[in-house]
Image (cartoon, rainbow, N blue to C red; front, side):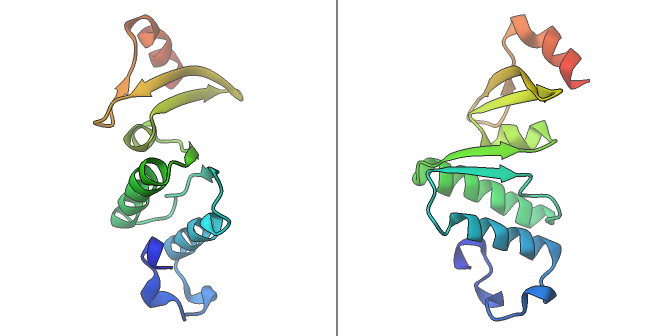
Amino acid sequence: MDLVGMKDNAFELFQKYSGGMKRKLALARALLPDPPILLLDEPTTGLDVVSSRGIRDFIRNDLSRKAGKTVLYTTHYIEEAAQICDKVAILQKGRARITIATNLFGNVLFPPQVMPQALQVIS
């Protein structure tokens, strides 16, 4: 509970948790078996801005960099993915259309030869 910032809420009933608190608890629960690969499907949905940033920082710094876990992260927001991922794949009709690298500053790096395709897929 402390890992996801919910230590003070440990003894509250689950039914009284907000949607964001339930999301954090789901993340903590996913970490219990200490998996080497973690699939997170829109883990920041329903969270306030501060909590969302905290979850992204936790995934990027603690899970990925410090613990060395592989994290597959799904989101509809390319900016969010670019902030925490080394590579971003844009899916269209269930297929990866473009896979691109991100830099250390969270910017998506489109190689010049795929820029026209990327703009077409994104729009």
